[in-house]
Amino acid sequence: MSDRALRKQQQTRDHLAQAAIGLFDQNGYAATTMDQISTAADVARGTLYNHFADKDAIVAYWVDTQLAQGIPQLLHHVMTLSSFEERVTGVFEASAQWWQGHWVYIAPYLRHRFQQVQSNDAASGSDMLAVYERLIADAQDAQEITATTPAPQLARYLHFLYLGAVMHALGNAGVSLSHELKQAAAFFLAGCRAPSAIPTHADQPARRRPKTKA
Image 1 (spheres, one colour):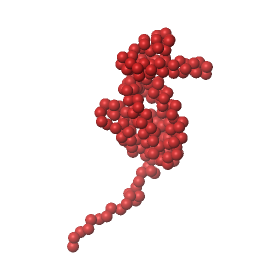
Image 2 (cartoon, helix red, strand yellow):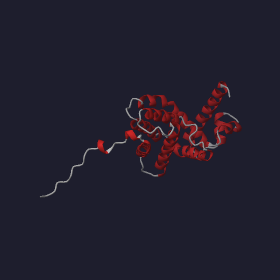
Image 3 (cartoon, one colour):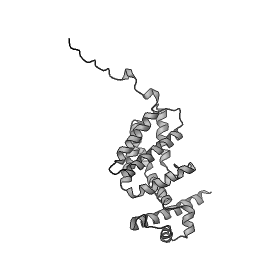
Image 4 (cartoon, rainbow, N blue to C red):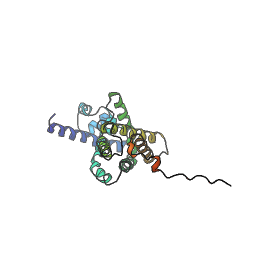
């Protein structure tokens, strides 16, 4: 596909997504139909289905587009932090704050992403994978995390931990998404920390022996 065709495709998808989000905000997600979206976008029903299989796919595209727009600024901020742990936590915290303002779209977004597991494509379309891969590659160069597993593979592991944390927060009222994402980041780091970055017994403060009575 030529660059011109790709630009036209993206413009069409952006137009369809904006029309759909407008209807979701106005009428509610469940009450809005694909026919209503095609009418609002002034396109044929078949054109809509050529780009999106269902409403969940539209939401996933719109969410990923919104997140992608903030990636350059987010990367600029987190790269000023000194460690991989601080950087990935910063990315997750920014994501948690964004989701708090768009909570209604979490369920359809997750449905779409996990439905793609069957096609081994659950992470496709997510620009966050590129962010994770950049952070992981830099951490591997700095010997913060193991380099025995390629950065792209570790990025996918981290992405699925992220999705799992979001899903857990969605299904449990009162659970903090920010806390869940911090736990996911800590779990990832614990599993892939480079041996040279793991504190040894010599690095740990000596324990004081309890005093015995004479």
